[in-house]
Length: 533
Image (tube, rainbow, N blue to C red; front, side, top):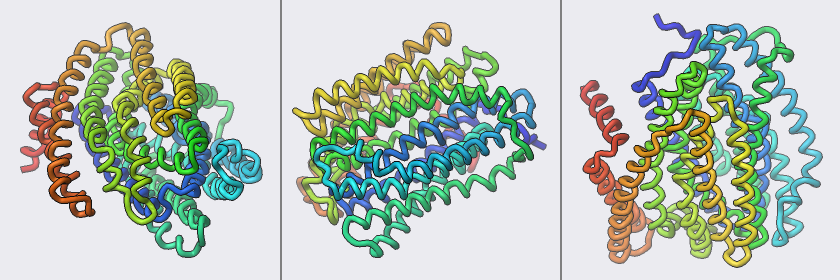
């Protein structure tokens, strides 16, 4: 009988299975998230009011990444996993319980304080194109949304515990439920409000969905034989250790989200529609990111942490290299497909209701330029998690400062002459610089080689196959679009068949080119199919 008191040691088969589960569930969540965005955009388009909502949501999102789920999970998982690896279950449970008390107390007080400070804080993040009415809407929406910081703080702790036990199902499917709850709440309560205040229905949906997401994680802990301790110990040196680890993680993740806030602030200097346009493009951009790179980085993180705890750097380098090549294999073709069909995809996804042709043009410009950062952003996720697993988070934090400097500097130079595209190009350049800098820094941390030759060769093959994908995708879409027109059914056919033809071309070429990561995936799929028949 398996011992549920400690996490299983994840072999390649288990990692592949967890990655597949997480990818599928996260993919469904991202699709539901796009459904949420489609519904919201049909109500609010790229209006100034929706831009106010975008900024109101980004501020608590920034704070939650500073002090809540992302930073906490990244700092907590390596320490908690190390205790489980050493069979110190009681110490691990005490640590988790102590952090639960710290989170509830600190983030509860922060949420109350923000409610009263919002009228003074939120106008700092809006530009000259925002009217007094939009500023007031931004303030009110942020007050409704800010309690998610507390809810997500607790959820981040619970998800960290689940990941340490190699349980990824609930962390993967809870965002799907989150999106469904938001959609239902938005549709049901939007008629209760008038004018721009209808965006409060969206904010209420997010608050309710976050509460449901948290509730889903609680029962699973009992099945994992996890037990909350009866007492807390804030003097435990491991509490200080996690907090010390959280500081650079907090700064690093906070800087990433601060980039988005800076982009919205500069966009609000361009026009009142621009912040929402960039955010709408970002939602499409994040679909392959969430399906592939987030899944790979999340699933590999506990295993990387265990390898780091054992100081097994050879296997850690190998696992990280494989993860990087898997991300490149999946994200480069995704970027090329979205790049060549930026406008048709935007039209298909959003253009209905209040979202008109002008909105499509503005959003598709941002979407086009976002694609140049997609593979780099995916690789960055894994490289940053590798530093976290080594419990050396100050390096990516310092590099994030440099990335932020590049982003802000370029955005300030480009936003006035080029508008929305200039802001997004700055983001892409900063993401690329971060990837190369993190790779170089990890060479020193891991004793040199990072399988750079293998990764370079695989990347060349992926680029070749992706170029063919782009040509086939665009040709098929262009022919069908010219023949069928731009009605919704016609768009579904032309975009869908264009992407399908491109994907088939890509799969044929990666098989011919014998890219190792694809060969491994294909063998695993075949073994799975034969085993199930």
